[in-house]
Length: 600
Image (cartoon, rainbow, N blue to C red; front, side, top):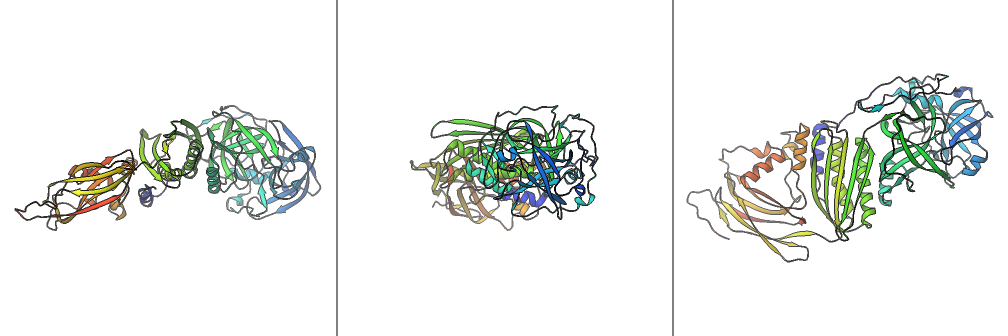
């Protein structure tokens, strides 16, 4: 079970809001290197060809025929229905997922790219997104960090300048026919458990297939790549010991190194920073539902910066920052150890969702089971602005699903760090160290005894606590607490596990203070209790005639804890167990002069 950091994170976000990212504008004019034909010049019966890769990296062509132009509202403004024929289509079983972005030429001129088809039908019919709609993605600005490495790609002079429709910036509607499916390959993943793939698929609203084929854990970076229409490409969300991405096709290239492809969105997230790769296509898998390509990324050659309803686009030779992730795993029952290292795209809003699921998928695979157990989890965050990094250690136990309990806190930490409203952490590294056992490493609080029944303000109180590790002999521990100088009436002495009835951020909740700096945010995160702590405290009413300041209402949690530890009214002890239980005893404070101490 987990006693989470969530309350602190919710309070921080309520008080301070969320972070925004700068955008950089570029010229919207995109000039393909091939001549183009506008959609209004197309007629049924026109014949041409499309380019794609069905195996390896060789671009092949297949015949197409225009069936009709289908007008529609929103973006894109039209679809062009085509019929594909020939040996290539016969071999693949029709227009396959992964052919998205395959350029279509009529009379040698580019009209657009294959973007959509229908499932559970004859797969020789498909829909082309017109090129004028695809290039309109460049009406939006890009998000490119100033420190990224940029290399200009030199291509042949362009012909046939295309102007984007200004009205497309206002219209955001997408084609939503339930029977119509993008001809983009499903997300392919390697290195994760089936349930994590299912969860990530649900989060991204995409099918995720575990087909392997991730290739080398270290993808080389090519700074001066050449690309061409019809070439197989990959777009990655993760790469390394965990790989996740999709295969598609380049539609057109511009002289300044920009490209368009896919002819539909990847995840439809607008301004993005995804690695673009060359891809080796193993084969096209026939399917009654829809054929699809299986590919392996080979080299990182640039970045996808636009992910829009009508296409993806980006730049060759531009490389974005990523999130460096490692997961170290130790099985305490078998002694086995492993470490997985990978990168995740720098998308602060996305990584707080999918990164914890990736960590869970690695643990699932490495541990080889789902179920009960105890985990010690260390999380370290490092990067720009975190000079010494930030760490948190915690213990978790579940009698049903330990891994699921672990990642709840990892998710909250990832979210608050990556979306903090104070400063952008670039580059960002998140490193998780997990020790797991199927045994219940639980420390139960069984008894509490207090030396005195009546005390005076400022007295030292001896406390005995009986603790029992799971199915082991009971252990007696003795501690001392100090009665507050302004104590009055009955007082409670508590012993409890960390996170059970814990101290809260009352000053924020009541509106007396807010968290106003990054360093202050980290201090408050450090102040959260951990599940392996044994916590003793004495809680007393304040004397109504006391002149002492009402500090609790004006202090943040870290300040309250530091003061109370110094006063001796709060004691915290760490253990190597998940601590369970809460006990309390009541004592009286006698403020009259000459009061005698009594024992219970």
